[in-house]
Image (cartoon, rainbow, N blue to C red; front, side):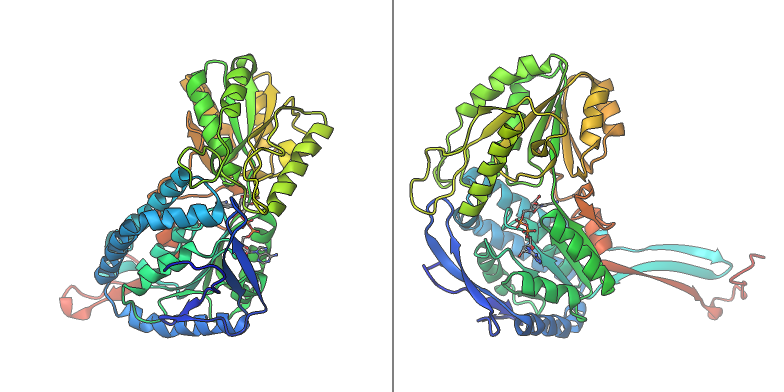
Length: 501
Ligand code: NAD
């Protein structure tokens, strides 16, 4: 679907593109590299959500009547369609969110990988059985869909994060309601045009654009059975508590502060590449962004100069230009907030060795750039060391030993991802054993698991039990039912269910 300026985008409900009927407001969607208005997004109201939920409930039975193998075939078709649109999707991600086109292509590829993983549902959704749990009695556990599932997603991965949930939910026979981030709703317009072309029963997938009102509606609506959330830690907590109180199955992935520990025996040039990609990729707006480097011993002396030189060499510019290494941040408000964080770190005593405030990029009014920034001499008690900045800002802390580094990492209230750079197997063994985080990288800056493994953090970075994608997705999107059965006509007598004879 072509995006024309000032077009107000539609919701997608019951298989139809539908204007919001109950919008409380309409917001501009802007290109953060230029400030240009790309489209307008309605903040839908309860009636819009309710229509989507009704459609999703009505679609549950027809969708269950589609065999598991036929559902998987729909996902194979979706994969082909998304591959054919992948460059459009990547350009849309860059245009509305700002990340470089290279980052956006990688994001779209990862979204497609989610579909590939979900295509395995005829295998992954299989249950288990055991013959003769007692004489002539068999037991089996089968998996069935949970019902209507909803996802609420953040701005930083407009293509991928919705696909941590949507393909797995519908593969398992559920129906689905998506609420994209109101800051980046356009990429999902393309995705839903491709979903529309699949000719699914109307109501299997629904899209409701909006903000807080739609979120609160999802949490309270009695017609929704399961909620997946990805976003900041305070909203994750709110979503988790309110959805659980309403009796829904819920998983809520929150914010992060990710540490990268550099040991004195690390391969420095490769480590610098890993840190740069991790800290400044997507302008630091990744929940897996490394935002704190903890150097151990003389690693600080080895690392700081090549790291600052490589950071200064990064080209900040419009993400659509292939030469840009770092694009804009999502909005002018985000730019100002991030710049304030740098000033606050400086006021607390850190030394700004690379300063991205007021970077000379994007002179257009409404462009929102902050350049890559490094603060050295940070101490673990400073706010810049503990709070999520969500921008291209890297804090450097020195530790005397691996034990001290682990203590610093584990003192964080977050526990999303962390990395260690070293050539020592013993250090890696100790680190992965001791560290309190859900995803660990070894000589890899952004250790975001591929689709076939579960993704999630610990502590304040995650509320719930089952993580996103991989094997956990089928667990989250199915309910288990155990059948214990006895058949008399087999001629083997009637064993007791309780007492083995
Ligand atoms: P956000 O929490 O502001 O918004 C996320 C979603 O919640 C959006 O759809 C938004 O409309 C809605 N929302 C926002 N405020 C709300 C409120 N008060 N009540 C109800 N709903 C509300 O997050 P964001 O700024 O879009 O995304 C950045 C955050 O997401 C960062 O904290 C980042 O770490 C986190 N994130 C986490 C992961 C992860 O896997 N843990 C992945 C990506 C992003």
